[in-house]
Length: 387
Image (cartoon, rainbow, N blue to C red; front, side, top):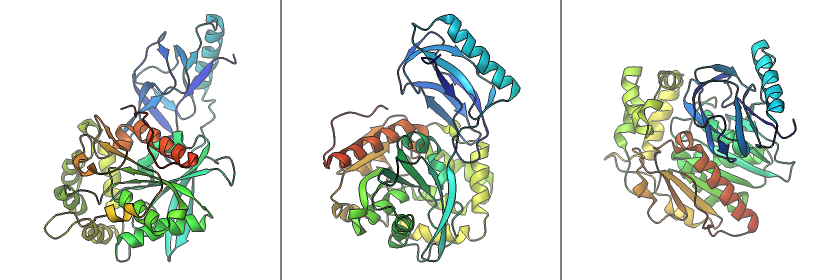
């Protein structure tokens, strides 16, 4: 059975124990290629698409649509057409028996930890070992009001051959609910302090929205520590910003008030689930979060609701490889803000949270720019990203 590849339920996020198969995007007998969209999975927080881990034929679907499956359980079998049906049937019987008996080895998820930087506890989650001390390191930095879990669909594929840290910025997630003066410098120093505390000499930095501006500031301050930058709908570029969303998110105190604003985050409004709204409300009700969000609003917005951040001059101070990913339907920071930026990839059918709606585009961007960093070139390759 060496040629039969198991497709297993992934562990997307720290708390995920099971996933629900919502829709198979390929049918038994279909030829599939590694990286093809294979199946939609509901994690309760959001529905994500699992890509095929290999190429071949989808020989058996073990878990049909509508079924809840434990993390690590086999949901399908992929094998070349040359593999005999009897071998596939035998592997399918084993998978079904394990599923029925609950004999499932849960996939290893991220390992959490904390560090102290400038008197603040910073929480993070790490996946992958990167091949040792000299391996590649990637640090994922979320946006305003987000946390390390927003990278749940990106961290796992990036961890193949890399060490990938998803960081909670000060004031967010499980980090200390204190952002000091709320300045870009304070947030960038938190990222740089995180690298120093973990003895990371160089890292590929990936930042979304406010996190995009933060990693640019970090790269400008200490360019020798940054191998490459991937900016996902970054704040601080252009002159268009949805101040109504930002102020509405900051002040909402109920699901009824919050949910309309969350619609601005996605191209697909069906992704705004009750669970997503409840998780955000839980965070917003933590002691000190209201002050954090209010302070960071002054970092993002002027009194007249125009953008307060302008980080293009900082980006010019960093001479390493840069790539930019932007959802074409971003209603928070419209993609027009990307004008003048290098190596911009517009992703169709994605909104502001492009790393949740179209994570493969972000993964490909990070891998591509990291490859340029390894080759010692800051020039973008001509290979297009898949939408």
